[in-house]
Image 1 (cartoon, rainbow, N blue to C red):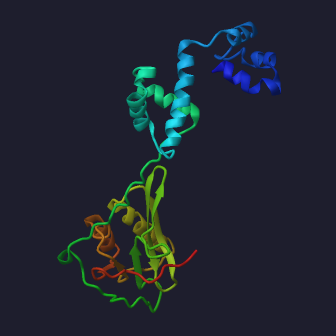
Image 2: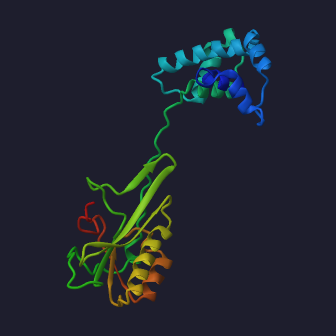
Length: 251
């Protein structure tokens, strides 16, 4: 690895300056050792690696550039066992990493939200009349839709990310929100806590406010209900199969 590093940078800095810069590190090497290594014949392992890399690249391209380590390892041992003998999986992984190739990973399926049973839900006090005569009369909470009406479950390299928002209907402003990598009840409750805390700090009264949501279990959890009751907020739940809210504010 040290020799490769020197080779990559020798045309810009020169061999001896690089060796002097490395002399105080764990990667120190003598100039004579560098040139001796360069003159040395490639080892049997290095020659085998070079041949394997050619084969791996060919197999990768022949299979639409989608093979990962597992499939590549099985293909090499199945089709080239006579040429290379048994090839370890870690060897295939190392050589694929050197070639800068990787397989295509299947995107995780978007999880579905669960709904509480009708008998566990309070009445629908809104009945799709999404209007309020004054602030702090009606909030609607949801995992809101994106363009096209799909919920805002955001796929990332680390997995799905989920958002929830609480909308103050009178001003059409988001009064509470949360973004997490899970769909536990705290996803919704944290947004509610944010909204209530902001109103308390502003000295506003939220008693009697109607909090309207769908039947998602996040909004129907015991702790969520306790948070509503402690602030004397009245729970309302929409009918099954009907979206809870009006269109959300666009960015």
